Length: 182
Ligand SMILES: Cc1cc2nc3c(=O)[nH]c(=O)nc-3n(C[C@H](O)[C@H](O)[C@H](O)COP(=O)(O)O)c2cc1C
Image (cartoon, rainbow, N blue to C red; front, side, top):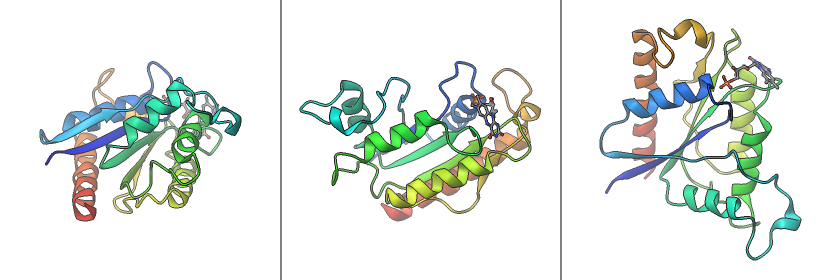
């Protein structure tokens, strides 16, 4: 049976460093892992008044994309020491209607990315706080703080070998974690 892992990127920016890190991870995944990039850019802001039959199409698309995943990898930049609103909104959309939390029980990976030295620590841990409530068991070690990201790149999409090795270590540990919880 193949394992399907969703990838969610918290930055909507075209040339996002966070997206480049997510892409590098996806290129390192073994062939028996199916990766599913889940777009969060077009989700209307969560509003219970819109939770009608049917709800906004983009909400349904997100919920239907997450549901079949065996795990979800989150890649987030840090906005004002927290996660971008777009990412929080995606979490909120997937968590409702009440009792139909689509994230529940899916093992998660949190990777924070920043050009700064603090490495998105605030975003990383704010995201972990939400994932706790969403009932997503989250890989504890190795923690994934990708700081000074511009210094880790050798080209527009290329990371230095030591960083690629580190990505591989994180990914290997995460996939083992997913397998253990399956
Ligand atoms: C609204 C906003 C708030 C930001 N706040 C932080 C912050 O708290 N910590 C940080 O390290 N970088 C912060 N930055 C800088 C981002 O790390 C930088 O823009 C980064 O490139 C965003 O990630 P991306 O390249 O994946 O889009 C902020 C950027 C924006 C636009």
